[in-house]
Length: 397
Image (cartoon, rainbow, N blue to C red; front, side, top):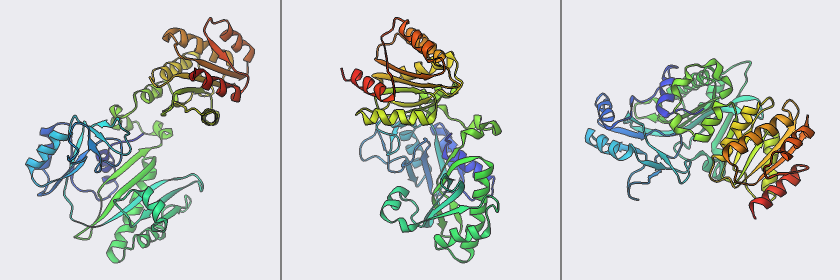
């Protein structure tokens, strides 16, 4: 689950982490009123969308010479003008794709005199099973470009979960950022607070880019991205108020309502599978046969007929889908239940794309009988390789 920059900063401030003063707004008048409460005389007007690269982005509705989604305003009138241009228009960045995202929220912050910019992130390192802190002196840049071109400028510090975050870890971060004296001490305190926030908020990722040193010797979080581990949602009823459903893919949002693991992709063959590993293998073999999956969809091990029907509808709601491959290994999830759901959904939505189904496991004979007697043009497959070849051939007819 992702949240907006202004929400992330409000959460970080509760852990004693320095952020510039700022006000969120959904209207031009709110943006202006918010700016008037800030010290000034410089302001930053920032589009709030769930995507990076906002400053380099372009608005679809504005000319090529128009400014992007992060703007320096030198007066209250400039704040008003920027807000009028940004709200309601579509910002396209490297992370949004060509469709872009409509800007419905702004964050107006006080201007900061920047002396140096740094990069800092906390994330879960799957290889070590620990939280890792990634730091670099190359703040303000795409960290991927830094990793590719000058990897020696990136330092990763893994945190021992038994010892917790120590001053030694903080000193390593300060050394990597080439900080000394009072700034090094400030870095130790800051990184310790960030680690505490990461754990207590159940973050999956916390990225600060840039972390800045100001002219008066402070370390401030100038921009941040935060996402939560959805597995911890039961511990955080407050997350519901932070969720902005307008920023989520409609199909992924619908899937979450039915407890389905769904991610929209760019291909044309819809996939419905039970089990994440099997779903990944299914997508790989579709690619191996020269086509591209339109989604990742795991219906889980104990899906009901209603859940399968919902999954099927979600796949078919994607206009890019030209064919569907269902790949089920029936263990806890019985093949006949899957078959009933497939037939019910196909009839309800008036299926008009090719459908290939591979069933194996518990009640496989019953499942195949249900499909064969459904009266629907369902193509059966003997194994995963056979299923992939058949759906690719069907789509290419």
